[in-house]
Length: 222
Image (cartoon, rainbow, N blue to C red; front, side, top):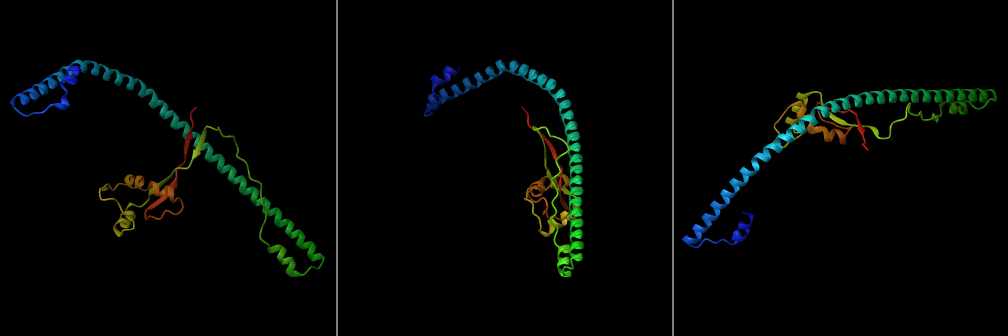
C-alpha cells in the first residue's frame, strides 16, 4: 500500500469532473481499507507489547517503591543527625566565644588594676574597661566528616498559618491571583507562594504566611 500511495501521487490529485471525483473517492476508500487492515495486523502485537510493558512496570514498581521509602527513611535519619551535630557545633561555638570574651574581660580588669596602681588618669582606665570587645574565638569545626556525595540543602517553603488573614489580604489587593486560579486551599497557596518564600526567606511579608526552611538531603549518584 505504501508503494501504491507513492505511485498514486496523492498530493497531485485534482478533482475537476465526475471521473476525477470517482478516482479520488476510490483512492480514499482504498486508503481507509488499508488503514483498517494495517490496524488489524498490528493490534495483537500492540496488545501483547502493552501487556508486557505493564508486567515490566509492575515488576519494577513494587521493589522501587520499597526502595524509595527506604531512601526517604535514611535521608530523614541523616538529616536529623546533621541538624543535631550542627546544633552541637553551634553550641560549642557560642561557648568558645563566651570564653574568649571572658578572657578578654579578665585581661582588661587586670590591666585596669595595674593602671590604677600606677595612678593613671581615671578616664584612661575607664576607656580600657569600656572599649568595644575585640575577642575572636576560633571557629569550631564540625563534629564529623560528611560524605562528599551527600549534602544537606535549604528548602524554603511558604507555610500558611492563617488562611483567613490571607483571604483578607487578597480582598484588600495586597496579593493578587490570576483570574483562572480559583482554588483556595491551604496547599494551593503554599505551592503558589513557595517561589516568593525562597526568594524572600527573611523578608516575606504576606499576612497569614511565613517562610520556613524544611531542609532536604541530596545525593549525587556515581
